[in-house]
Length: 244
Image 1 (cartoon, rainbow, N blue to C red):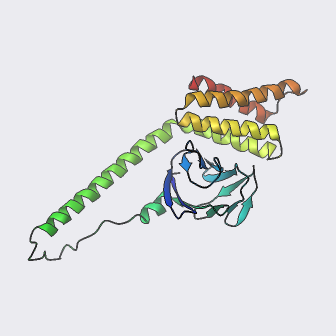
Image 2 (cartoon, rainbow, N blue to C red):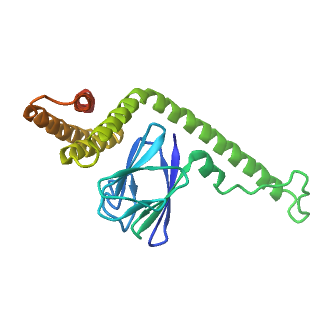
């Protein structure tokens, strides 16, 4: 589900960002998908899974969603229309693509029955034709974008579903109190972001770090890994050859 984030920072700047990936990072670091000034280098991660958006607090600043605090290292659903605050430095709003497009500035219209000015007999008609061409062109670009994006979504669906399921199950089993699990989860999310950005070197590094953590856990555990840990390890092992 494509959505749009509207972000307003303490310097009164307004930023609009289309969310087309399953995982994005928000922070002041230039490497973040949504860079915003005045906040932590990596303030939070937004993840789309199971038809909903979730926010992971990656900083020490208080993050609130609709007034509810999201503690450092914790996650919380972020529903459409809810305001997200990062301390007093930034406020973000999540909107559906349909709602965002409704609020886009409209092109000037002309009444079909309106008579052109006698002082400018042809200019208004020319403006009307130009406006019509602009609208038609925008529609064509929009349709092309939707077709292209839909094709990309379809081709990546199986990997996306695997990623969403394994992350959801892993988070559910380990919660936020297991430091090793948090490092594994953070590494896999960063790796997936890098993979989607085609930064395969970073993806290999992060997948490798997460794999090493799970292997160490497996060797030190008498009964081996849990089913969820094994699924996470299998997912990582399956993705590594694809980022070589």
